[in-house]
Length: 276
Image 1 (cartoon, rainbow, N blue to C red):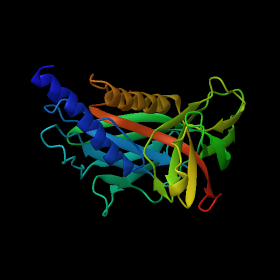
Image 2 (cartoon, helix red, strand yellow; image 1 turned 90 degrees about the vertical axis):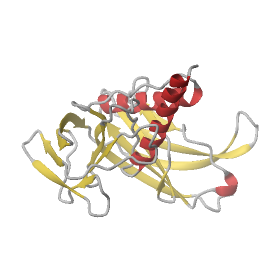
Image 3 (cartoon, rainbow, N blue to C red; image 1 turned 180 degrees about the vertical axis):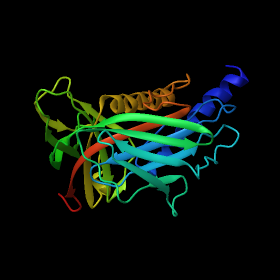
Image 4 (spheres, rainbow, N blue to C red; image 1 turned 90 degrees about the horizontal axis):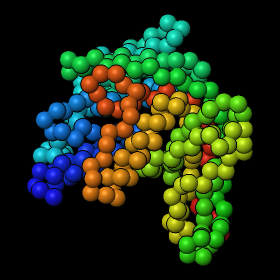
């Protein structure tokens, strides 16, 4: 590989790492622009039926300045729904580049629109917020590990998939109220109407179990699901090969990377410290 190729692949991995840090501030992950000569806006817009909206706006950085990933201030950010309701988001005093509205109340089953004006760019998006699916329970069971034959704790999440509809999920994992990295996804293509026992979580260390484990079940649209799925693939491919990862599929219109992700949510938690 020539020098330029090395710079290109290194830049891609630095970008993925940086956006992982940026997006955890709004509980999410996004790929950054690869070309250092063509910086772009990076938008992570999250609205939920359980929490106030947050729209994080940053600018993509480059290989030669990997620490700086500047937040974008003085943007105009609006969210509206198909019923004609509109909310203006203001920049947080405590978190530059993060736009909020404490009076926003989302209702599942509606389409929502995002409008952003920043850095002489106009970015728009439209996405559906599905109705919530109740997370029944979670449990930690001691099971035999198929690789080591040892008995290890394993996390399970249970819910019933609604029959007759295509359902898409993102699962958010917290240890002692701290969001864990990783993208956990599930769809109902082969489980329509079935009882789900989801176990695709990272292994638990029995010697260092958290006091509390919380699981949040997000119901998302197909377009948002595809974004997270292609993001997961880009991160995996970038970590396991010398080829440069690709940008995930975005539902944003305009010169920006990221996602507009309306979601309904249910959650539950379990105390696990001290289990045998």
